[in-house]
Image (cartoon, rainbow, N blue to C red; front, side):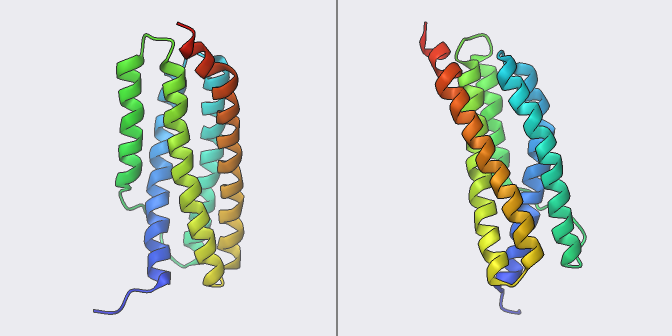
Length: 164
């Protein structure tokens, strides 16, 4: 059996985040539908369009590597998204719902920030300049989304949830 390399790890992680992004893309409309706040609904829908672009960038990276774009089941994202489903089930009729949805969304963002930061560093190490640039673009979007969600939480969702 051949020894595994950073290149192999990069490709496996690329498959993982590709699958994760596709899961997120499918779940964002449900999160938007269940949110009470129009601002939060809009944030979810805006991020859905960004996610579409992020999936396209990942496909460009696969292409640059001469590989077919394919996902590998991302168990971490599956679990994170299941927690979001539990928030909807457990808090669906409360003022805390939006705070819970927002927290679930930030967990998603933090996972993505971690993955994209790591992959960008690996792409740099491997001399994959195009991949590094594409990953950096996505990383910046994920950080921006996290900041938007933090502001929403602090200015509206958390105070509303705490008011009763």
